Image (cartoon, rainbow, N blue to C red; front, side, top):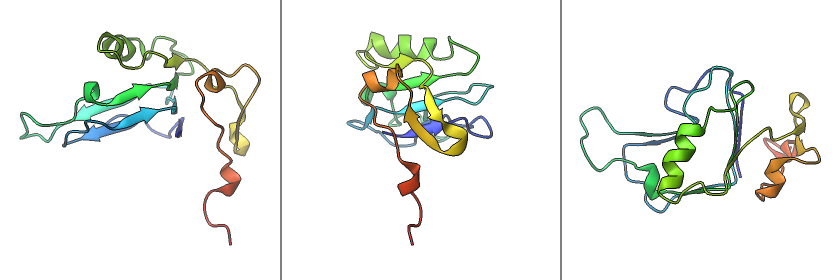
Length: 133
């Protein structure tokens, strides 16, 4: 249950990047990724330059019930979702606006009709994050 929302720059290695080592058995579920207007990779697998085998493979991760959104490109995730669904991953994941109430003011709860609720994603109360003293 993570929110990755409109970063200031396009992440060089993906919004969620798996690097160098196998990630078999990892779970990436119930996350919201709202892209930078220029897009970028939502998820990536990266080996070291000299590495030829043994790196991370998205196919070895449990991926599902994620929500992806690009503010202007509704086809931003088409290639990724097609690739993953062929191998049985991301079957319930969706592309759509999470319908946050007021993210500019830190309110990441969901408006009525948000696809996040259908995926079982819980809103984050950011007022409980950070130092509390």
